[in-house]
Image (tube, rainbow, N blue to C red):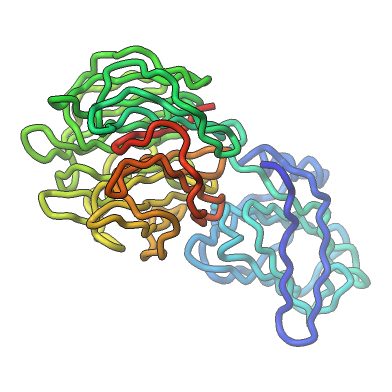
Length: 436
């Protein structure tokens, strides 16, 4: 994460002004590491409480609080009385304060010189806050107000599109830079095929698998952490096409669903060394031509597809690779879309058919799919999508009525950009994944 954004402070009511600063530093730790860092800086230990999910909290001096605002904002009331040196800590448990922030009510005491007519709101994802009472004049003072980086060791910065059809199957690949720039064609390695799936594994590598030549196939091709595609590996499990894949558990992957003699709901896990496991009995509606992406930093989601009729249901994947039963679909029912993660912990489904759609649906860090967002860019079917730059995404290639190589970048806030002129062989049915 580059560029530090300080905590956002909003005016609460008329004629109210709150001023808070930030020291601009970043902690690259998480969980207990954050607590330990703050406790060391504070010169003593605090009693960390169970995770707070309620919309209100009455804070007690000497405590540390993980505040989870996934479902709602939280108003925090500070103690009505305090002694010099009293301290309290708050940390953004789910990295969601940018969506639902916290409001601090100083409860009759001053907060950084301002009296209790001033309410202070913190609204930056990943904020961790340590306050100490300094006495009646200045009251509570933030001694640490920092934005904690999200999983810095796991941010894949580059991507790769591979395989697909130009009217005949191809194995060509195109690398994506950490700025989202697509490179020219790289001569294909492995069996040329249409409609494979791809995902990350091992925190910095990728894998292409399955697809269709003149018949359904089951081989896989590993992608190194420099984007080099390896030769075919015979897969274990049912050969099939129309599969989707995503990462889970931060370093493993999963292939799921597809078609082989009928619609399938079986899955195959991918280890953190890129080894594909045998079939796991399917959960959820059997279907093909669906999409999948990571969300929440360590979980996944399969969505949309066709059972012979298009559907919009989704199936969540836990951080241990367990697929859940169907979740009622949100948004336009469709097949032949693509999906990728963005923002470090969210996802996006986009494009597909019927017709040539450009509609998208965001996935929250809790795996909740949002309603349709009006599409940006050329509507198309059978694109690919992957993450790049650590927290952004890219849709690329597909069929608009003819094969195309156009791409659309996705910001770290999930905003899809207009078309970028395509580079490389125009094709549909490619897959994509990130690597580092």
